[in-house]
Length: 109
Length: 111
Image 1: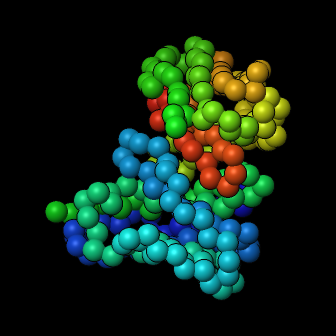
Image 2: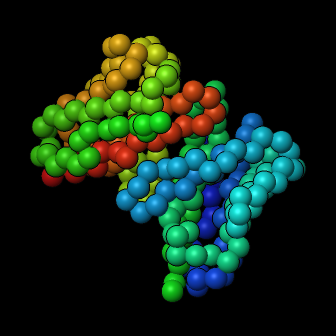
């Protein structure tokens, strides 16, 4: 079925650097959700965006939903070692979550 | 509030054996999901229950996988017989709205 595409697949950054992951769809999304999965852990819901052009912030995390509702981004400012993990975007369609393949973030000390 | 509980946490079996996983959702959550997460990929929905009824099982390999939620609370997922490609983490999640809450998962290794 239709899946949201995420880039990059992997990202290594120095601690303190910024990080961005992008999510793209060929069709209009009804919403976009972001999850974080720590190594060996389970996905944890971070946020849901619904409106065109919506921007939400959670401390050092900034989430954006594109004007056409076909793309989204997650930006982390000044990464810390606790940010390590895989970040998934997903669409909630009729209470079914369709996940992207995720971006794995590795922090270099 | 207690989270989603799953057991066992780890399981190693040989191919062609059977295995069962158990999930107890968050109290009051009517919707329950089973996902399969293969290493390096995002979770893939296997089956979705609303109370004790199946909402979506289109991606469940029904020749070997089965799931039930008889009383609308706990759920079990069974694989019989297992194949090597079934090695994955099996995640259970529950929801009462847009947010899904995931359990810790069962890590299955098929040898």
